[in-house]
Image (cartoon, rainbow, N blue to C red):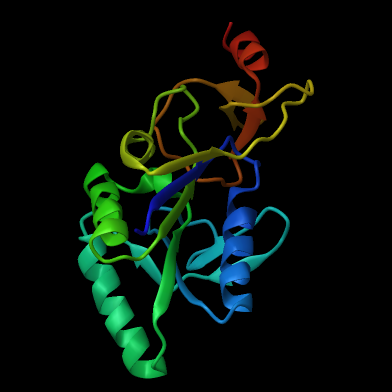
Length: 197
């Protein structure tokens, strides 16, 4: 049986790099994969961007209102008609931005359509609140794997601090993609709480 995997970690834990490595591993064995990400992630436009500088175009973007299973079925049909090859796996970057319904559709893709789904993302926002997509993945994924990174102090980072113009902020909307003024830093619990006080 195919499975739904959720590989999560704080920012800068190498999630996108791990996804691109997984795609490479499949393709090195002549297996074909599809890469996707939620359309809300404007970083890199239609690309998955690793902080190591590796990038790759996604095969499709996932809009918040789309049925992911139906979109995947159409994409697979187009791919197979064009190439004659089958799809071995779906890899999704920034999975925290999926809706709960889309995560349920990921489970259906894995179980009913027999296509493994590897979803990569962060668990919580800069206020330590779970993203809806991540919460649902934690609830129903067959396999959970934490990708680790370290805080500035050397301890394990588990939170994502938001900086606005170089200063930590704990107010604002849940989603603000990296830009000129907004950046993020991975922090351990101690460093995160010391910035809040």
